Length: 222
Image 1 (cartoon, one colour):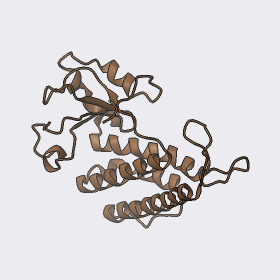
Image 2: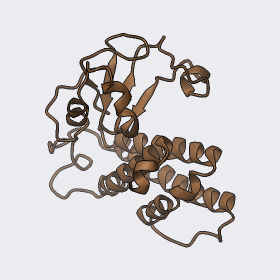
Image 3: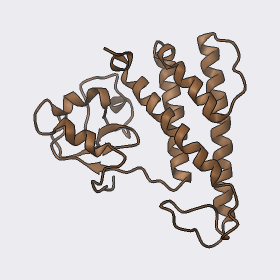
């Protein structure tokens, strides 16, 4: 069995969000490159041109690039400090993120550090997606939530997870965030999908298809 199969769900989530950010951050930087062919800022998501004033958009993108760059540097420094590692070396955002990915196995041994890293990385990845104009897709799944029996299961491809959007849903594990934070929605990362398919109302293949980035299943609003 691979190390990935034995990894804690938070480590799996962190690895996924790092991958998302590594892929999207260069796109965000590219949005700051002026186009000689049109007055708008970069391109609209989907390939169409942006029209109208570009300065507010450019400022938003510039602020996001700066904040993510600073955030990744600070996060890597915090991880090194917590783990007792030597000071970090220089590197681009993508290089630093790759180095953080290589430390996840060690970070996993420190639950507080893993939770901090996961919160920071997921927040930066979502902000990057927002600045690019990518709303996180939400895909309705058939079947009922095994916790609250509501028809409230949704797949979130960017997170590689299934969430129950019923605000009253709570799992039996008191340490879960759904007990500590009323805004938290219980989620099942990839390593926990078996819980959703155990009752037979939902097939593993359906979850995998919904979470495929190339899936043509229609998205629904949260």
